[in-house]
Length: 360
Image 1 (tube, rainbow, N blue to C red):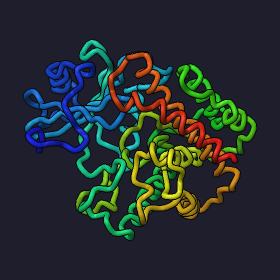
Image 2 (image 1 turned 180 degrees about the vertical axis):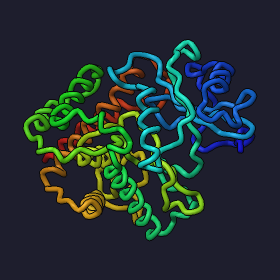
Image 3 (image 1 turned 60 degrees about the horizontal axis):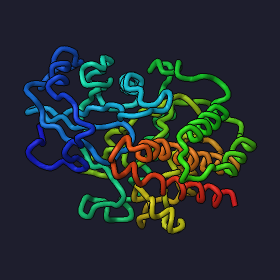
Image 4 (image 1 turned 180 degrees about the horizontal axis):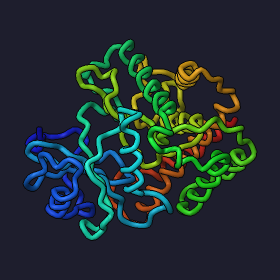
């Protein structure tokens, strides 16, 4: 049922620069939605404020809530913000990974709202941000332990999803994934670099010189973190959905875990790392990165060597800096007023120092 008459967690009024023709979207959906049930009238629209990459909106119809995703305005990295690709991956994953959202429609016609976009059903539930709210059912350390287990189990399930049944094996570009990733992110960071951030020269040189033998390829999410997980409000230790598939592909699952752990700040991390924390992984009862690596390897029946782990964590840190810098580039060049984008320059500087701390 629509929640247009009450506040929705993480949603606010649409920023003027991000507004679009709501009636045009409704007309398009009425003619093109895979399931048009409940798409009637003009919806109330709110914008989710947590992200700084693709733009995400809540469309509240009288009988149905939908989510619309579209690219940001301004200069974009080559290959980024591909709405059709993100839509297609989620649609293909659904039969083999039930935590993927249900797709409603993809519009490639930019004349409708000025960009391509896709729409999906809203997954209702709890999404954790920087801290765990009181009274949601995660106060006990045992519950937080179960939540961490559920998160890793979900990642393992994705890494073991059937590529042939989903038809997504075609995303696999074959051997050389690690080399391509390092080279790709070095290039992206260089193109997005602004004069007020570091060059990551030492980190880049280490990554280029210490690439491990890559693991057998699987489906990977490439942005697996708590604010992309939807939790069951009745039992918040249970995950009911995984969001934000913009970066998903087929590749090395160890790098996928390392990229997720770039967000995994634990209680004994330095103050500057704590300052940029986006999720509550430092709370009592939440796992350490050591526990995550052990649980993941045990669940998959594999061994991850210390050198593989270090490479994955250093790469994940550099890659996160690249993502943050691409967002900050838009703020630096005044292509957005999003305050989260404005803060990303500081994040990049902290991540460069953290990468060197990992290598010390």
